[in-house]
Image (cartoon, rainbow, N blue to C red; front, side):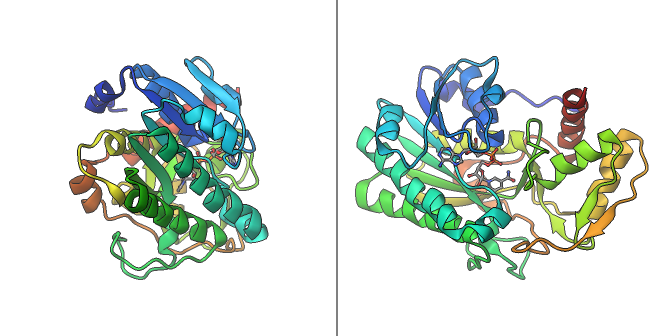
Length: 325
Ligand SMILES: NC(=O)c1ccc[n+]([C@@H]2O[C@H](COP(=O)([O-])OP(=O)(O)OC[C@H]3O[C@@H](n4cnc5c(N)ncnc54)[C@H](O)[C@@H]3O)[C@@H](O)[C@H]2O)c1
């Protein structure tokens, strides 16, 4: 595995106060860990609906168990904060299809409350975790931020609304915001046990336990699988960038697409096992193909990926083997 180079953005966060909503979850905990190691005072606000406090083991971060719908808890958590990294959300497309009202409450009203609290506290910048789901089955790939959105699930609609709210708060109240459209993020600590588990953590868990993995659909669907270190790096860049960001939106991916069949082959070869998947029905709301154009992320916040797909897979499998012991 190629070592990840030291991240020059870290110095911007030494001595700052940072709030990570959803910081007990997969991506949020990686971000909290990096901010703490960069010398920031890290606060996490998470209702633990899908996150786990053990994701924060061994780091110096204060955890408040509360919902982003709780304005009083948000007021406390944002007091004297320099940066807010908003990651709390209902994260599953199928769950959002089953409970649209719950999804829109958390992902739209919740985002509005986070922005409101950040504005009142005079936060320097808010970064928002958005999603490639907003592109839907947009036929022109790679997807560019100028492409029309095509929201095919309440989850996607909630993420698109979160971006527009962030832009509105920037223009009405002068709160600096950047929304990052994540493609398919993977890495250590991604929960393989949830019924909505992301595909790489679910495949890793099954392959390591010798259980046949199931592909939803025929496996020809493609994704821009992105190691989580790239997303952490993008958040640090977005928060510390000197530009005048008022609702900037950037894709965060690798710019490369991989089919589910090729993904399983790569994981099988890395583990030295033969893979013979079962095939199930496609999941409602899923799109066929997805790949990021990352040109704007490079020009707007200076982003280029710092970890390759192959290194990310090796690291994730090493973690999954350890977690299975
Ligand atoms: N993982 C991906 O591939 C991906 C892709 C696109 C976007 N995103 C976005 O990135 C963010 C983080 O996703 P993740 O993959 O780490 O998921 P995750 O489920 O591990 O993390 C989400 C966290 O939010 C918390 N949470 C949920 N509802 C809450 C509420 N009402 N109040 C407070 N906390 C709440 C959960 O307990 C959890 O800790 C989400 O906003 C998600 O939509 C993720």
